[in-house]
Image 1 (cartoon, protein in one colour):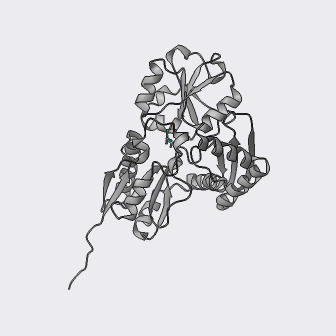
Image 2 (cartoon, rainbow, N blue to C red):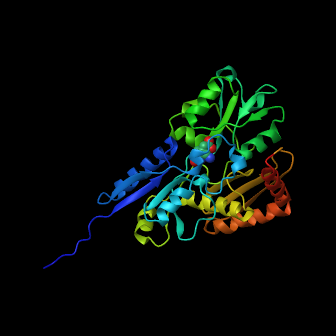
Image 3 (cartoon, rainbow, N blue to C red):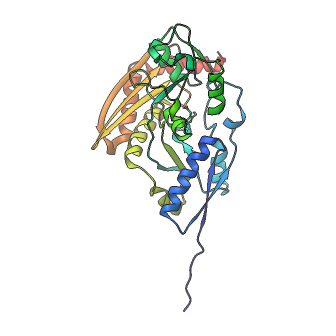
Length: 322
Ligand SMILES: NCc1[nH]cc(CCC(=O)O)c1CC(=O)O
């Protein structure tokens, strides 16, 4: 009797080299290894454009796949089998031949304020006039300017340790960062205030991981489904559909919030001008099974409230390099 046993497959995981990307990828590897002890999962690191260009404000270079393109080429060229991304860095339209196979359980998606020691008795609404807030996100900048026009804003780049060092050296009075990134890098103790959704709506997909693979790799797709978190997926699909419909990337002032109770999904979205003066904001509710329709419906409603004009103005400003 002959038995045909196919050799155990080695699955290659692609990731950026940043500390956060590695922590996230090793977590995915560990979860998969627990579920599939017979398969070996190997981590392959790659540097992306976003890791190389460190001295230009993100808003000016745009973000269309800045952190994902090299990994996507790696999948198309069969060098890696899937890639782990911070979902918020993954464009809403994927290249031909690739799919978003799974979305993992989300950390707290909110933004957080980290402060210089001298402000340890302050909150965002009690910081003194002219306090310098570090952020490289137009979304955070615009929403904070709207609520706190007396604060100043300054771009900040570099990895989390670099940013914290600049804050502690007094270059900034406070930084606004994702709760999720701080928690994952074990800097949660530095979170001074979690910003409520009334002040800052978070980025689409913030706090969740998105796993992308080749559309025709049914084996990898079914393996990845084991670590999908359906509750997070429903919320994030609504958020991504909202953003896709507005044709915005991560670096446009678009924020969201989602709540999912039983089968009822509530999605709030904002489109806001960079000066914080003009905004369109609304909330819609529907069934979770129609998450994507809900997202595009909210986008249409915001368009009726002037969202497109706000976005067009921003694209012109960015192109002019102002
Ligand atoms: N754009 C950078 C980025 N991509 C993912 C995270 C944090 C983790 C997450 O939001 O999932 C961050 C840093 C930040 O926004 O503070």
